Amino acid sequence: MKNAVYILIILGTIIACSTAKTNVEQPVTKNVALSDTVRIANDSLEYEVIIIDNGFSTWLASRAFPRQYYSQSYLETKNRLYITEWNNRVLQPQRYSPNLYEMNINYNPTIDYGYEVNYLIYNYMIYFQNTYKQKLWGYVPSR
Image: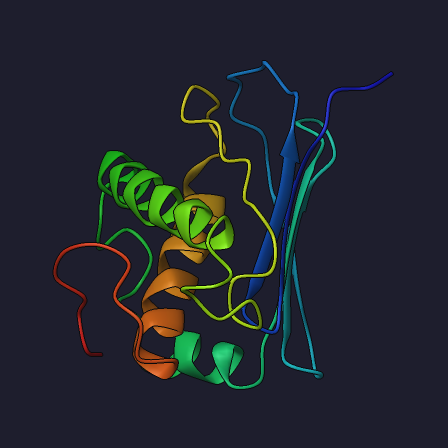
């Protein structure tokens, strides 16, 4: 069976599975659909990111800092912190809205997902925190 990493964000939900062990940089194919869906796929690393959330594409284009503003290591560190707190909230549906935190994220910090994946996850986490008035960890830019 092929190794795979899937990260899916649907209406404030991120879902992921990972078993990939590769650390090779490969070209990324990016498509943006009109239905406010952002999709990134890399068949050689066998991962896919799909973000479906009303307003995210517009927010990403108009308010997010441009690509290469942050280093990949910065994005990875922030994603690890945000995703850890996200996963803690998924496990506490009596305390945190299960409508916001529906599914666990399996983000493996030992896998190099590449800049684009980390950039989109980071920016979705900023968008999510500002849009839904949540604070996952530390200072949240109010872009």
